[in-house]
Length: 326
Image (tube, rainbow, N blue to C red; front, side):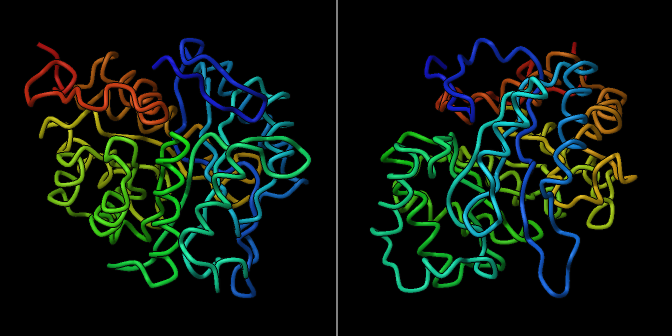
């Protein structure tokens, strides 16, 4: 893990990330539609976002947020830089294209090579005059059992850009579906499994799929923790424990995917800290020791971002793969 992280305020040595990492969040976005006016985190919400992150840094040592708002999602790199500076929490910004319902016009007639070139240019030069450079590709998405034609193009372009730039890639799998198809497409385009995180797998009650993804070397994102309207945390915990018991603790990422202002604590929501306040204590109660908690909340996301230990697989029964320490 010698390569520094590219954050919204510049390069950051991995060794300086000593506290937990939120592996999939949104700090500024706009996914509003006529049928859904609440899916936004706008400038007026920035003080609440900043305050939450600052409190989590003070209480739990939160060190880094991986912010996966990409093209077509209302991203605001300058706002991310302000939130990061004011909260004291480092932020890695994303790029790429979300699932087809949110594709901007630039996708419609573009070939894969042109889409990939656009991402590479952005990653190497920074999006716009703000100079903020992406440090991860994602959340690049699909919305069904298999990507649509347009989603296949944007996912393939994301894989090409990941290979060209050395960045890792995080996906959006709608309700957890289609993760294996995403992984097949991305690896066929040259992306390495250990540089891929398959998103929203805690919404899919299928432990066999989780095991297949992890066994292939991909990261399995349990990244909607606390979104009880989609899935109960009790089910999430059961699915996570099953994956840990199968020996795949080194391939789990955890986060809350705060994607609308109603989830902020100032508006009565669970907030970015639900993972640390509510879910991690349940994981401890189920037998996880502090080394395992650190693996899940810090070391794994750092290895995902940097590509570290990509071939160092943990065998079932190794210390980090057990729930209950010997």
